[in-house]
Image (tube, rainbow, N blue to C red; front, side, top):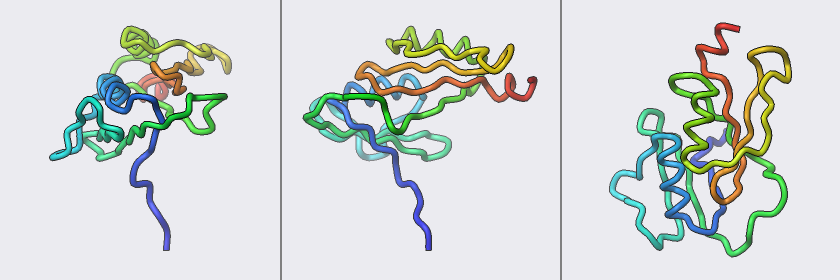
Length: 131
């Protein structure tokens, strides 16, 4: 017998606001029949294509230290660099630029969401296949 991942939970100060930010980033939607509302302490969003789910849960503690778990994101279309600029425009902050660390055209960029949760933007499938 094995288990499967039901959803990935992200602790936060404001579940509604952070879920809305990640919906813009990922193109996810609210769970059907369970819309997220301002003031909700738990807000779930899902990928309309795969059903992958992120659950934002309000906690009293502030984020402290480096994430032990983070999301690696790959652009659905366009390039890594285009996606990095789009995500910055949404309000992400750059933590580390590791582009080219393993040769030309390689690497990723580490960013943080408005509450400081880190995630990485990788090269797109097309960029990866072309290397």
